Length: 605
Image (cartoon, rainbow, N blue to C red; front, side):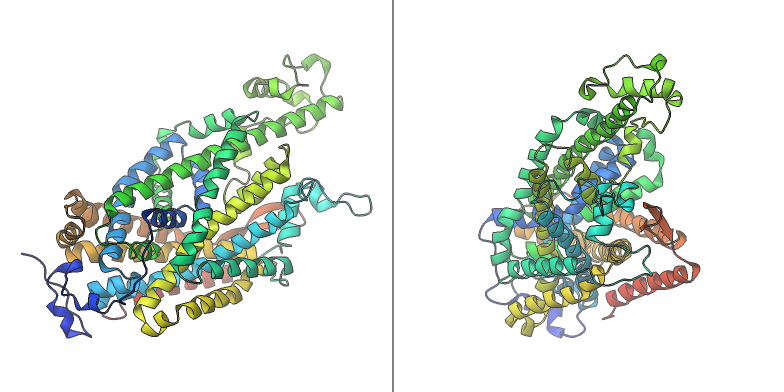
C-alpha cells in the first residue's frame, strides 16, 4: 500500500496532496514564484554543477590521499564507493531539487515541515565554508599579483645588508615567502597578532568578485562560469604536457599509481575514501539541489548524475598526474643539485666515484643513483640526499603546503617561471571561484525561496551576505589566520554535513518512501530508474553514511586537537598540540556543534 504524504503541522491543506513531488494539485507548487529563473541551455547547467563540484580539493587533496593510501588501490576503492554511495546520493539530491523546484529549505519543508531543519543546517554549513574558502582565494590573488615579476619573489632568499635572511636560508625560499611574507604567521594560534594588510585587501577583492558574479543570481554567475569552469582544464592540460617533458616526471607518476592492495584492510583508508567522495561531489551543501531546481522537470537528471560524477573523478585523476609529474621532477632535481654540490666541493672520495655521468643529471637514472647512495653514501661527508620519492613527496603535498610551497618551488625550476606561476594561481582562483558561486547559491536560493521579502530583494541579500562574509572573514586575515582556516576546515563542515546527508537519505528512503520517490522520478523522466536505487538508498548509502558518521565522531573525540604551525626559531613546520585546557574547550565546542546541528534538524518536531 502506498505511503501517504506526511501530515503538515502548520498547513492542513498540505495533507490533501496525493500525487507526490510532481503532483499538479500540490499547494506548495502553486506558492512557487511565477517567474522562477532557469538555465538558458544545458551547457550552462553543466558548467555550474561541474564548477561547483570540481574545486581545490581535486587538486590538492585527492592526489595526497591517493599517494598516502595505496596509489592505484585507492583509485579502485574510490570508484567503488562513488558507484555505490556517491552517485546514488548525488542523483537523489538532483531529483529532489528538480521535482520540487526550490532550494534546500523548500525541498525538505515540502516533504514535511518537520524536515525543514535539514535545509537550514545546509545553509549554516555553507556560510561557514564560504568564510574560510574565500580566504584561500585571497591567498591565490596575493600570489597571482606577485607572479608578474622576474625572478619570482620566492625563488631566492632575500638579503638584509648583504646577509641572507637566516629564517629563509635555514628553511627554503618558498617556505619563507609563504609563512613570513604572505602570512607573516605567528608561532601558534594563541598569538593573534595584527591584521595582515595585504591579505585584507585581497580578501576584499575576492568577496567583491563573488558579489559581482552573484549580483543577478545565476544569470550573471553562469557568464563567469563560462571562463572559470573551463579555464582550469586548459591549464591542467598545459601543465600535464609540460610536466611529462620534465626529467623525473614518469618516475613520479609511476610511483603514484603503483597499487598497494593490502591497504584495503585499513579501516581508515575506507573512511578517507568515503569522505573524499562525499566532499568531491558536494553532497549536503544544498547547492546541488539549488542548481537542479532551475532545470525543466523532464531533464534527465539520472544521466546528469553519472556525467558530473565521472567528470569530477577524471579531473581528480588529471590533477594527480600533473601534481606528481611536477613533484617527481622536483624530487630528482633536488637530489641531483645536492650530488653536484658535493662533487664540486670535492667531498666525494675518488675511490667511490659513481659510474654514471653526474655532470649530466638528465642522464642519471634514479635507481642507479639510489643504489650508489646506499652503498657509498656513508663515506661522503655531509648529508647526501638519497632521492627517496616517497619521502620527498610527503613534504608538503597536501592543501596549502602543495599549492603555496611544493608546487611554487617546482615552478621556479621551469624556464619562464613567472608565466607558469601566473597560470597556476589563476587556475586556483577560478577553481575556487566556481565553488564559491555554488556555495553562495546554496545559501541565497533556499532563503529567497523560503522568505518572500528576501526573494523581492535578492540583490540586497547578495550584497549583504558578501559584506557580512568579508567582515567575519577578517578573523582569518590576522597573523594567526592560517591556523583558524585549518581548524574551520577540520571541524566546521565535516561532521555537520555528514549528519545532514544521513537525515536526507533517511527522510527520502524511509519517511517519504523510496518506491514513492521512484514513482515521482518516473513521472518526471517518463521512465522508471532501476529498483537497485531503492536498496542503495535504504541500506547501502544509509549504512555507509552512518558508518562514516560514527568513524568521524570517534576519531574527532579520541584524537587530541592538533594543527601544523610554523616555528620561527626552528625554521620548520611542526605539529602543535593544544594545551589540556584548550583540548577541553575544543571538545566542548565539538559537542556544542553536534547538539546545534541535531537541534536544528528537529526544530519543527
